[in-house]
Structure formats: C-alpha cells, structure tokens
Length: 173
Image (cartoon, rainbow, N blue to C red):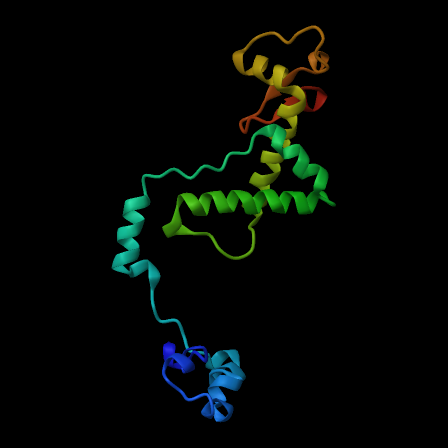
C-alpha cells in the first residue's frame, strides 16, 4: 500500500526538515525488519479476478509460438557443460511452453522424472534428425534406405516415440 512506501512521503506533503526524523523514510516499513513470516500477505487471488478472467478470455485465441528446429538444438548442446544440465534446460523450456499454453494449469516446483524423460527423448530425436534426417524420412514413408546410408545394415526402425533405433540380436531374444 501507498502508506508504507517511503517514496510517497514527499508526495504526501512532508516537510523536508521533518524527513530527517521520519523512520519510514530511513528504514522503510517496519515489516522489512521482521521475519518473513510477519510480511503482509498477498491476499489477492489473481486467478479469480474478474479483470484477469476477462483479459485471459480476450487473449485465449492468440497462439504461443515456441518452436525449436532440430538444427537449433546443436548450439545449445555445444554450450552445455554436462548432459544433465542440457536435459534440465530442455525440460524447463518444455515446461515453459506447456505453462504458456495452459496458464490456468501451470506446473510449478522441481522438474519431475516424466518431464526429464520427455526432455531426453526430445534431445535424442533432435540430434538423430540432424544427422539422419534422410533415413528417418525414408523409414516414415516406408521407403528403402539409400545404399549410401550408414544405417543400411543395422535394420533401423522408429519406435512408438519416433526415436530411431536399430534391430539386432536383442530384438529377437
């Protein structure tokens, strides 16, 4: 509130001579010197606000554009110092995208195991597409791989998550 804002003291007409004796001016509101527990609570529920709901309804039709092309992943990969850090960055970006799409059902808190798993799959698919895009497109269309393909002798296939895999003895065991 304005009455707790030291910057508003002058605009309320306090004489400059009296400012030297004003604790609010020098120290701020008293709750700033207390424990966090004693801070004034924010009792305003934004999501139930009529204005918020009206604004949300007006903007619901506008798409959120967060698109990362596979080739754009490589610079991110090259800047990360560890795979775990990279996976977490991708997971946070994916959470941001979901939260932007669904502002009333935001996910907060630490990343979850499923979020990290989805980020891992996203990373694997992105890197695979950068290096094996022609092969992946042939497999998706059901066409034969070119004779120059490095994957030709490995019986490649796409799994249920569109991750490129290769066949072999484990598949038949």
